[in-house]
Length: 435
Image 1: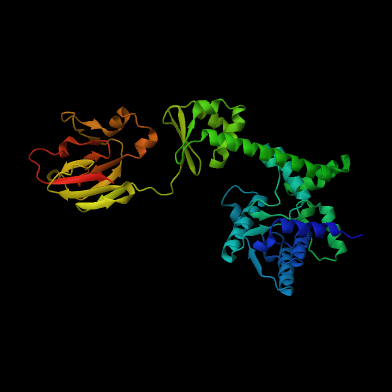
Image 2 (image 1 turned 135 degrees about the vertical axis):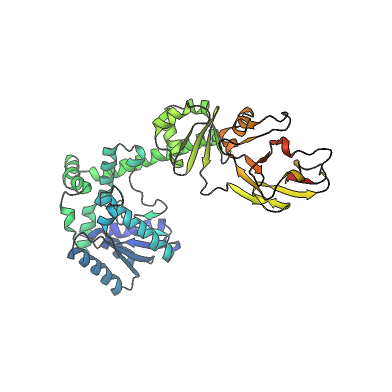
């Protein structure tokens, strides 16, 4: 008996993936699944290289596997990359299981190899039984629909062309085509979660229903269809409620109308790194100025709205002004000394009252100035901004023009300090213009 379906179906999947446009990196362990993958790629016209990880957890067997894959690649003139990892040392850097440590190490290294060699897709030998194990693991963790749809043949970064084939189909194909591979004895133990599922749960499911594999594959297709429908609906809601760009403004009352609220909040905000729906629901009723953060975004409550803002990697907090003629491009400000006031200037300062160098800086706690028009009375800058009813984000974007002694000359675009105003006796002026 032959298995033309695997080879033919593999070619169909490659064609659907537009393989002539891609350069692949194959993750090859030396086991039966990966050697079938390598054999199928070698018999195709796809461009690829091979990467092998030695985690040094199996003594001589790990060395044997690396040499086996290396020799195969040398025999068939296939570019080969290998690396040795100290898994135990990596585990000490965080609370990692052996499985998680190995996963992190290999995928980080694969990315490095891809970048150096301009390889646009990683290819793995995951099959249908692997997807079932992933499904059961995620089901036990309560990960929701996203975790149950399983691995994808193509997720834009990783290509898994064997994903619809069962382990038994692959082994039969390898035997009938006289392929060589190496067995990993750790697969026979129950030391890892996947192994326990593989040895004790999957066989019972297949025993209960002989067509379980086909039914499971169909179930994954249904779940993926449902996921697409949800994604389309979420995009419609985002288009309706998410206004503007950095900040994105979202009306709280409109958000609260969504039902079921928790699910909508999860799908709307997960891509921004906000993963706790309980925290989001509570945040909707928080006070103005309240804030929560993800790794990449800030979410600020601003009266009846939420403001979604990208966290900038670096922000300029102070700018020196050394000369009496200068342009600050980042703030669109121009400073020009003149013997005449410019009627088109945004603000005009008596030049003789200021000491250079000047600087532009952000507001600090305790800052005060003497607002023009208040008869020389002192006022805290934070109190001044509060009276203007500035939002938290607007306050953060306020700049102060200060002199050499850090006296506030001007709250940019808001109020001049009384001490630096022009008078009838002023003879030299600093004209400040918002470009």
